Image (cartoon, rainbow, N blue to C red; front, side, top):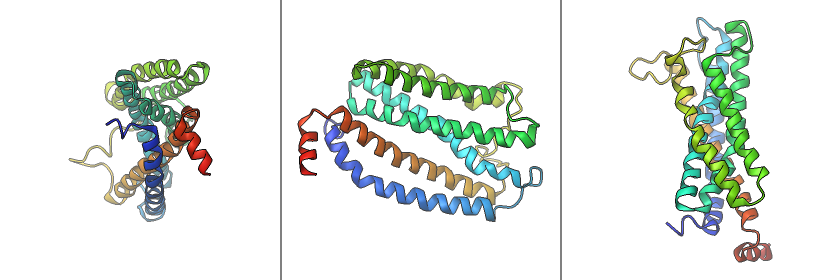
Length: 241
C-alpha cells in the first residue's frame, strides 16, 4: 500500500498508463460520435436536435462521477494522511468543473427548442449549477490557502460535505415536478431509447471516463512534481533530463 501511494511510484507508473487511456479514449470517442451523429436514427419527437445528448449526457454523468472520485480521494487524504489521494482530488477538480460547465451549456442549448428558453430554475439544472459552484469553491480554497496541507484539509472537507448534492441531482427528476427529461438510459428493464441510440451513448460514456483517466493522470503528475519539488527523487529526475 505504501509503495502504490508513493508519489515517485505513481509518477513512473502513470507514464505507462497515459498512452493506453488516451488512445482508447480517442478510438471510442471517434466511433461513438460517428455512430451517434451519422448512424443513429432521427428521434420522432425531437428530430435532429436530440443528438446533443451524445455530448450532454456523458458530460453530465462525468460531472457527478468526478465529484464522487474527488470526495473519496479527499476523505482518504484526511483519514489516512495519504498525500497522493489529495493530489488526485486536486487534479480532478478542474476537469470535473469543465464537464459540469459543458453539461450546463449543452443542456441550455437543448432546452431552447424543447422548453422555449435557455434556462429555467429547474431542480435538475439548479442542483447541477450548485455542483459547478462546489468545484469552484474547492479550487478557490486550494488557491487561497498557502500551506498545502491546510489547503487540502479545508478543500477536502468542502468536497465531502458537497457529496450531499449528488443524490439530489440524480433523483431531482423523481422528487420534484421538473421540466427535465426523466430517466431513459438507466431503465435497462425497459429502455426508453432505441438500441441504435443507446449503444453510441454508452460508448461515449466509456470514452469520457477514459479521457478523464488520461487527463487526471497528466494533471496529477504535474501536481506531484510541484508538491515534491524539494524532494530528492524530483531533483534526481531533473538532473537526468
